[in-house]
Figure 1 (cartoon, helix red, strand yellow):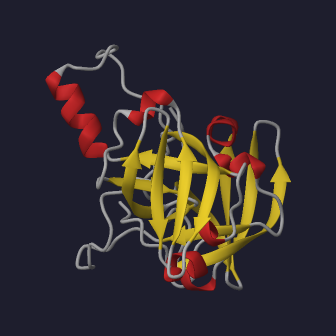
Figure 2 (cartoon, one colour):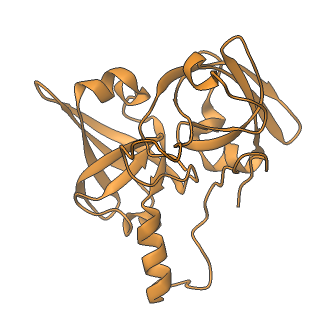
Length: 218
């Protein structure tokens, strides 16, 4: 489990195209410190399993389904990425419950500058909009954020200078895709109340595996 507090702004150093997947090499000296094969690291909000580490870099395999349903498929060498290690049992819960299971992608629509913060409007699929509420939590590219305004097919967030400086949200521009993970508690409540139109199924989610089980999607 993650909390949406980005630890490091990393970089994609190589993307190897495989038959039905891609192998990413990413630089992140902080998150790779002590990391080993089978550990999990969230990359732009997608939980990936570490294959190997060396010299402050790690590799991770990403299957075709994840590439298609997240923004990872658009990454190329040189791209900056948000990195976070899983929360340790005695750590501080700085953000909110983040699984690293991306529910879909949105698009940055508009950025409005202010003196000390920036308001960002992001479009999202309508099937995810019902889980996003004013003053609720949402994860954007792995960053835990508070919703300012929630519309039928969009929401807005306010970004402080620290978030702008230390995450990819400071450099994303209108038209750029972002990974979205809605509050898992909202999905469980909806399922328990039986209010989903398709209550027999769960929302399509990109599921990063836990340690040692391999990255997967459903």
